[in-house]
Length: 141
Image (cartoon, rainbow, N blue to C red; front, side, top):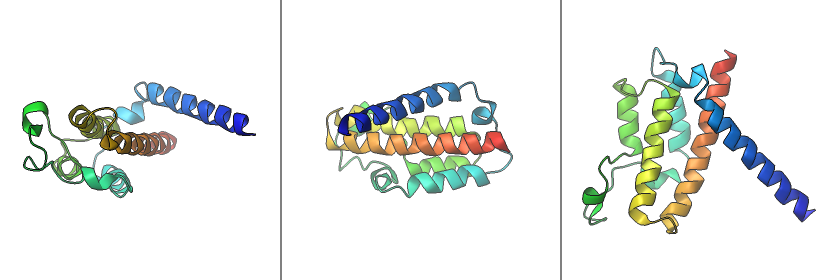
């Protein structure tokens, strides 16, 4: 039973990777939204995830010495929201890319084996699921 559970988990992970690779070919992923409603709904779902708290505000340089030297393009969820409202983020792919930058910066600064990196992988997986769902729903409408 344990073996079949691992096998199923691996299959589900592979299907998710396949779906993420196919996103780039999906018109709904790249389509600019005429207003901010759908993107703000996605932002709200993502920012309310249990692991999102550390990504909600900019990194405080006094709490993370050297951050501004090592991270060229700081990004956080509050900035992502501002960018959606200002229509600088207009598609699911724009959104996904900016949230991906948050995750990249975190792992780059803290290291791949850090507690923050573990938290980041969980957050990024949740974001991927939410983006896949949003694109799937947009493709149906």
